[in-house]
Amino acid sequence: MLGKRVIFKNKGLPYLLLSPEVILVLLFFIFPATQALLQSLYREDAFGITRVFVGLGNFRRALTEPLYVRAIWTSFAFAFSVATSTMVIALFLSALANNVGKRAMTYRTIIIAPYAVAPLVAGVMWFFLFSPAVGVLAYGLRYVGVRWNHTIVPRHAFLLVVLAASWQRIAYNFLFYLAGMQSIPDSLVESAAIDGASPAGRFWRIAFPLLSPTTFFLLIMNFIYT
Image 1 (tube, helix red, strand yellow):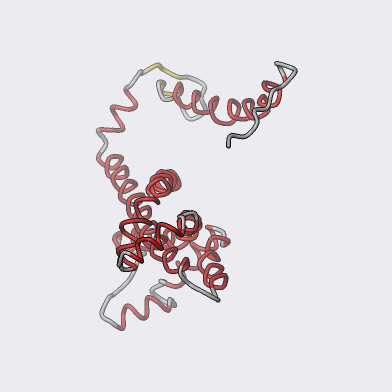
Image 2 (image 1 turned 120 degrees about the vertical axis):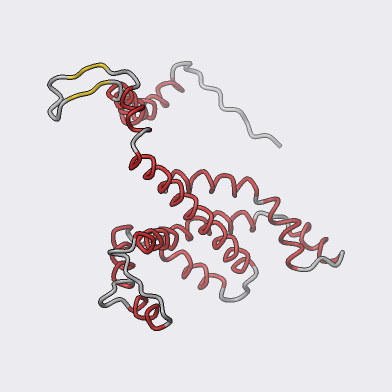
């Protein structure tokens, strides 16, 4: 049954209620974005005293600069790595947590806990864990023959940043996937079980397709975040 539609007696009241949010969006999002776009069409000195209109010259110069193009590809690789790894791990953990019995709340709290850690603190923590001099995990890698040193090896530095960002982002994805799984009607799962579907079959044929809107939302949000 559809809810009742709210009708305002004063025609201007809805606009008045929306005005604070509209003002904030215009002031802190639309205006800065417009200014940044306009300034990108000029070449200015360091103090902004003199400027020359160059049109799309700044964009052409940036896109033909090898270091800038390499930075763009590195950013895409970082975003793709963090988004895919966090979504896969969060989906797996949410499937497990959704089927846990008595200690469900304990497991969920442990998984969500990293999300409460500040990004700066998380970065420092992972930096020391993989520190070539005192890091416990770096020592473990050396023990198995991997000479880890993210301070001089670019590949190691990239992997460390991906690992730190993914570790903290898993909890965010986990919350949405768990909520999506709990919203799936039990009748669908029970019917599939009666028909002889295995737990893996019930997940891939029922839960996973129904989670597609959540997956699309998390994919967009993870790319924006990274």
